[in-house]
Length: 114
Length: 110
Image (cartoon, rainbow over all chains, first blue to last red; front, side):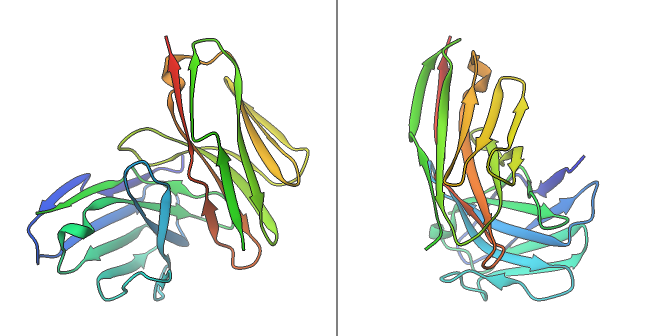
């Protein structure tokens, strides 16, 4: 149990375009989903927390107009990177939680902006 | 300020050589301490949750323990497939956030 999927696993896009990443909890209802960014050999950096049906809470320094998060249902959250630039290239990971306990992580999405 | 520190940053062991990874924390109120394993290019894989000092959990060659200041992840007779980055994270009372340490990169040599 507790499986989280992400799609796509890898994406390459041109500078100035937008990219959408999906995160799904496959076998449980996720009341809260989290989006992280990870740079090579670094730990996870929390970008935002989203609860189903409400606006996401962004961490300090994360541009909410650039990283749009939608948590439309208890099994789906999306992260849209708008007007992507090369510095947005990174490994994006989502996680899902059904309560105040452990988070279960997706496999990650490697974004490369050229 | 809530903080999680993992040591060592990297550890190389021979196959079969047991050792421990450390996660020390200073937080306003602990709601849970988590251990994850992360392979390169993959998302973290959940291993253990510990809630109170004195608690221990085991899974195959791994055993996690918790005190009021730190947690240890003991690895007994490791195999090359145990090579990965091990992440420690804590959930704090203050705002219910989860704070991650920087991880320990473990490499087991055959």
